[in-house]
Image (cartoon, rainbow, N blue to C red):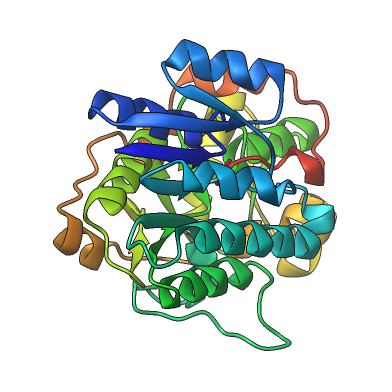
Length: 315
C-alpha cells in the first residue's frame, strides 16, 4: 500500500514509517520543514509538504494514497482545546478525501479519555457534551469519517509511550525530580499508568491499517497499569534522590501543570485488540525500559519543565 503518514518524523510516527517500509509498504510522509523532509528521505519515504492547519495539503496527501495513518498533533497544553479542534478539522479533511472508498484511516486518541479508576476497554465510549474532554473531538471525527464510507478506526495510546527518543511524560517526571530534589508520588502512589513501547505501538498501527474495521477502537497497551510510585522509585534510584509521597493537596504545588497526569488512574486493557489483530507486544515494559542510564542521560539537560515540552503521544 501507499500510506500517507502525518507526524511521520515524530517519536511514534518515525517508528511507524520504519515499520511500514519494512513490511513492504510505500510511505508518503507529511513534512512541515526542510529538516523533516530530509529525515523522511533518509528513512526511505516520499515527502509531502504541509502541516495540520493546511487542510488542502492533508486532502491531497490522502487522495494520493491507499490509506492514512494520522499521528500528528500540536502538543502545546496551554492551547489544548484549540489544538483538539485543529485535530478534528484535520481528520475531517482526511476523511473527506477518502469518502466512499473503504480506504483505511487510522486516527490517534488516548486511553485517558475513558474509564478513570477502572480498567478501560476498547468498547468504552468517551463522554460527550459540554463537560467532555477536548480530545474526544478526534474520536468523534473518526466516527464521522466511518459514516462516509471510510474504514476509519482509532488507536488509543496510553499516557506513557516509551523507548529511545522519548521526550514526553517520563522525561518530564525525571526533570521535575531533578529540579525538586525528590522523586514524588501523590498519596499512596497506587494510581496506575498504562504504557507501551514505541516499537510495539508502531506495529499495532500497521496491523490496524492492514486488518482494521470501520468504527473499531484499538488499545496500544502493553502494561495494563504501572503504579505511579513504582515509576517514581526507578527515577529516584537513578537520580539518587529520595522517593516520597506528596499529599493530594500539595500535588499542584509540587508538580505544577503536570499534577493532573501525576494523579491520573487509568488502567487499560488491550485484550480485545490482541484478539482482533493478533498483536503481541514484545519490547520491554515501562519500568524495565526506564531502568536504563540512557533515559537519564537524555534528560540531563532539562532544567525546567513547561507545558509546551509535552510532545509524547503522538506526533
